[in-house]
Image (tube, rainbow, N blue to C red; front, side):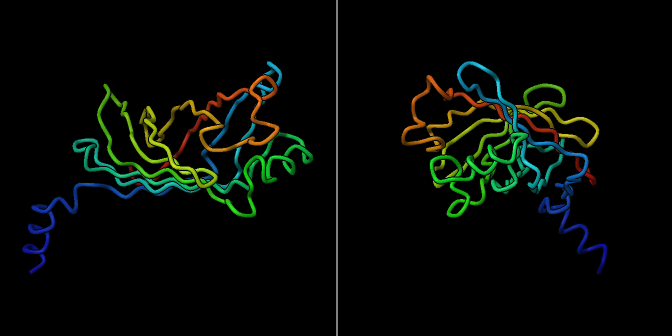
Length: 177
């Protein structure tokens, strides 16, 4: 019976993808934007990722990512409190950001283009995230436009003060890959 079950699972591809577990203590999620032309770095301290992936069949993989927006750190408690307010992340009503993949395409040795839906502050946009996968670590960066997600709206929508471009960088360490 066990042999029959294993054969059926292999035939349907159920054993092909590997579920990996995020190691948050070995992972980083950071971002950079410019305020009045000066680069400002920030990071998120709380996030989670689910990854089901088989390098032999990457197109069958799936990635889901959640960020606790209230865990943002710009290196100063007053800045952190400001960015939590309604014009920025509005963490009272929009405490989480999510990314869910819709496709994974090989882009060379250990590299993949992951297309998906990024939802932030109630707005959802299609993005493609280039990822490098090596020794259980997925890393990369993606550029987004903050105003596409209503981040820094109202008086802060003026891009001469805070640039529209934000670069998000990540290093996600997984076990089970």
